[in-house]
Length: 165
Image (cartoon, rainbow, N blue to C red; front, side, top):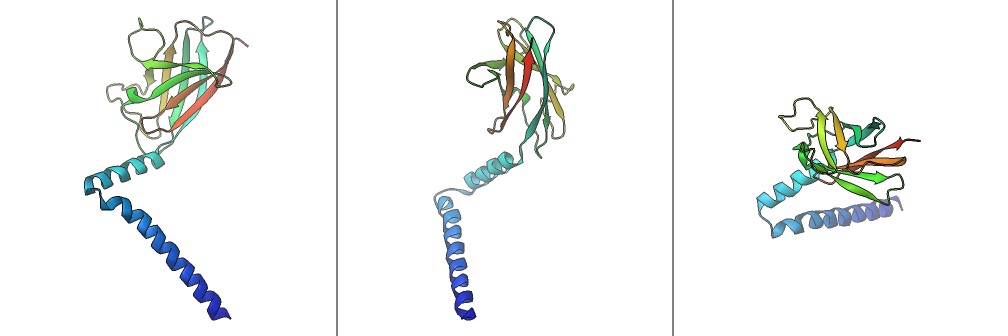
């Protein structure tokens, strides 16, 4: 009886291995090696990217400026910093606004990096803290908000804060 059970398990394992092999090889049959390498690199970067929201505060009493800090806890750098999408959302996440990357303060709703201090590199290196400053027009009103970041490869996270409460 034990031999029958072992044989059955070996057959199931063989079928599973065959199905997995076919599902991995089939998409590559019509592709060249460059596209396979590119898709593997994208998958690797996606799995290796991560960040944590540390804190966010409204600067001053006007509701015009917000500072937020995020730490890159992934194993890859995020570059360039300017390709990160930033959103300011209400506490319930049902509404908000997209904040444009810029150092031109004449544009409404902009964000810029404060740290890392070496902004010439435009790289958010792994292990580094990214401090961003949002300049808003119109300013926010009293309430709970979230600063939400999304990296170029789709990893997102946010940090909540209260203003005027």
